[in-house]
Image (cartoon, rainbow, N blue to C red; front, side, top):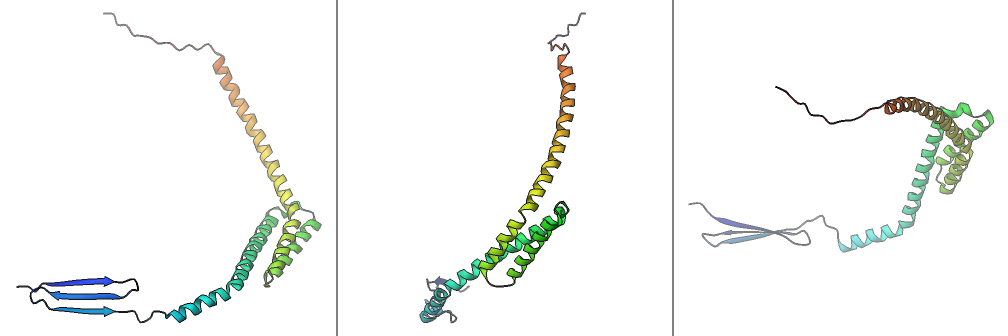
Length: 180
């Protein structure tokens, strides 16, 4: 009846595919090998490795520049947000000093000088310390007032519980006895 064919597939370490087919009835066998044509030669691989090593220092410099920019950009955003929320608590001179430092940092972000970006970011953070102190003080003041109010209401609630405990309450076990 039906032809019986045994097919084998084998992929070696280099990604080369070997296919074999054998007709069991006649014993005839065919084999084919499939190779990838797009593989890189050893010379091309070595050239790429050398290029990567040659550009290692430049890649590292760009990585550090990107990190400095990201940190500066995040700080600018954070300080601008804080100025919007708490800027009214600062006097005009402090606010102008912070805004000038933020503008300097934004100007430094336009360039490729990592040291300048880091220096302007540090100056901006130093200038904004007063803003942070004012924010902290306002949060402490608001939290302190809320905490005192909560403490007073808890004391009143606790007072009610204390009265209930002072009453003569006795827990007892009992049995119901039926007469009848």
